Length: 83
Image (tube, rainbow, N blue to C red; front, side, top):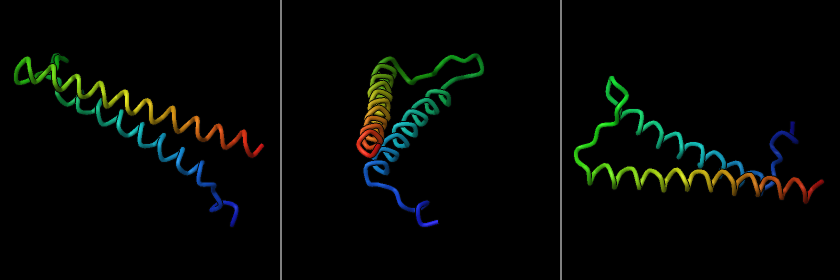
């Protein structure tokens, strides 16, 4: 049972980064889904709002992807180091 709670810091940090990236991407996709009307078209207040919001969401999705990749690299490096 003690081995179940024994986790190295690198694995923990990697797991947190992967989960944070997944949650960030899910949140961005959920926001996009909630803006859609019955026909599936995203609705915005005006053109400026659309451009700023979609650009911001793209950056956050990219950040989420980078967090996931970094987390996987950390977990992989820890696995290689200890095997």
